[in-house]
Image (tube, rainbow, N blue to C red; front, side, top):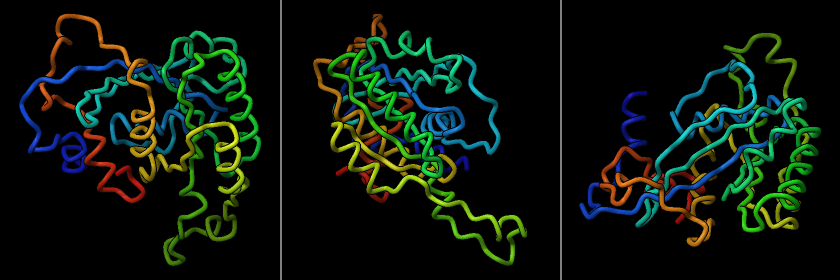
Length: 239
């Protein structure tokens, strides 16, 4: 695991030593409770997955630096609670955000319906230039083939069915002008690609230089995920 984490944070050895600009990007995660928002962002930030996480209360804040071409992007990520009682707090987090990942569970149609409601709210109240990615999480539940020799009786007799067809979600995203991805926070599938494409789509004039004299220039060998190299190496990654 340590080797994988080191590889995740390794910058291209051929990168020049010239300093690059650190760009600050605010991203908010929205979605119904228990769709895996926290697991997705922890997979991205820490390359980590925990089977049973405590529900988020209010919101959690995480950061990740990512190298993409000639930019060093500092994602400032607000992971919001999905419980309905926290809904009224959401505008405080998506206000002035450059991007949002709206997450649903591919095995729960109700979570997809809630994701649509979040998209409508963002399109009505958030910045008109916000980049919105629709993210169908937990694909491992519908694609994973359990070894019969190792499976319990419960695993063998209670398969998880996909309630949200990929084609339906893709069509909705296309009609609404959204990016669309399917992910598994458990295996890591699709997670890096999601944040790579979000980073690529944010207009340069919407990316804010991170404040402070320390951000005037940053070594390209800083502790950061190299989105371009890592996504290109993984299946379905950006070119």
